[in-house]
Image: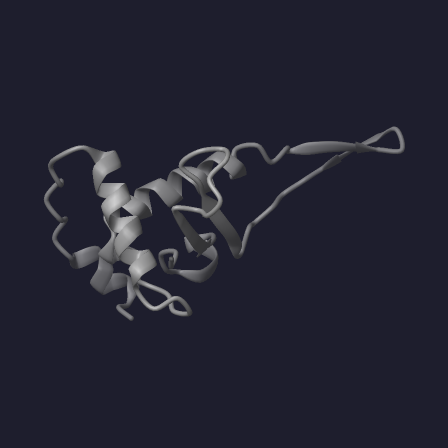
Length: 114
């Protein structure tokens, strides 16, 4: 695993060409074909990484900052250390196109795995 300083010094990868959804589907199939019990580094599949980051942003954006209990307002701060995320192409798909254990990079200092 590379340290944070080494990660910052890496040159950015050139933007991939082609339809992003085609890249996501291709990367998802490659991950599914890999060892079923293992994890794959998210950096190897940038389109899936972006999809999973969007999914994480979607559910964390809906965490309320306050909640009511017994007539009183309380204030909430949440850090999702690890979340199991499954992304489906359709609402009726029997299996997810991709799944991941993902969470806060601030909390753990690395990218999600899937």
